[in-house]
Length: 175
Image (cartoon, rainbow, N blue to C red):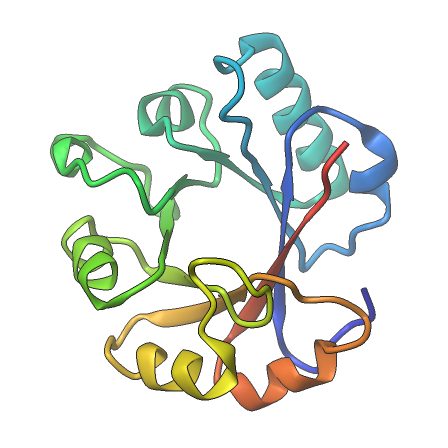
């Protein structure tokens, strides 16, 4: 994916593979997300250490306790996670919570969960959460939180992300 002016890039991966991390610039944030199997502690530590060497921020999806335990840069809370238990945890100063939402109800839950950036989907991918550019912009204006564009972003439509008011965009690599 070509670089967009001043947009932060978030990259979802589901296993430790240096080939994909090496292709990212230092502005990219890696999010390890694998809902098919339990978190592999060894992989999380390998990923964290590799990302630190590369000076790339590393977040783990859906397990804030592990993020704190392994001193990660932050945690990603998926749209289906509606828990508020993490609000009792102690975080280091620069620890960031980010999360995804598909509608106003989920955006309000993410705000209650104290996330700083909300991934709103789907901008382009024509799935059950499809918004398109206009609905995406309207939905994004329902929160004061920063918005990350998610869903179907490719080389063919990347320039349209500029019109979305999002501060960044997210992509995924499926193995």
